[in-house]
Image (tube, rainbow, N blue to C red; front, side):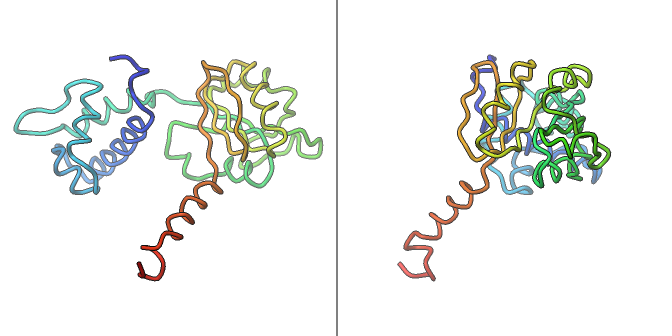
Length: 215
């Protein structure tokens, strides 16, 4: 199995499967079939089997999947068997909210540092995380072993920030800036754009079949 053949949609679903398995494990369930997993969490059983088959044979005939074993496999497949240190660039309202996001406490991701260009913010703490000068990014990233960067700066500055991040050797980037960014081939970037998601929903609402029940 070659990594490049696995689509991002597949890895996204693997993350969902792991979350579902975590819930089953919390409730003390030892085994689950693909049909039961699909029925319980409103998924497609054939898709579950197809996705898992990319990575190996995990099911046992007559049993299904051992919850704890499959959890361990998916954790390793998704690279969640080790800690990941995150840097957030942009200590505005969004960046500070992300740094203080409670949901990360339940994961293998921890925010190690915040960065900004505003001298008034440098040195302050947000949720126990220090704000550093963006000029010191490479030094701090190396010291804190940062391997994931989150870009939360205004659009005009996003490309230059991305270049600074990649020059420091960061290969995984999440971008919240509302602008397309040019990224090197060996860097993986995911862009989160709330406006695009809302406009997609607006398109759905604008369709005749979704207007006050009239066709």
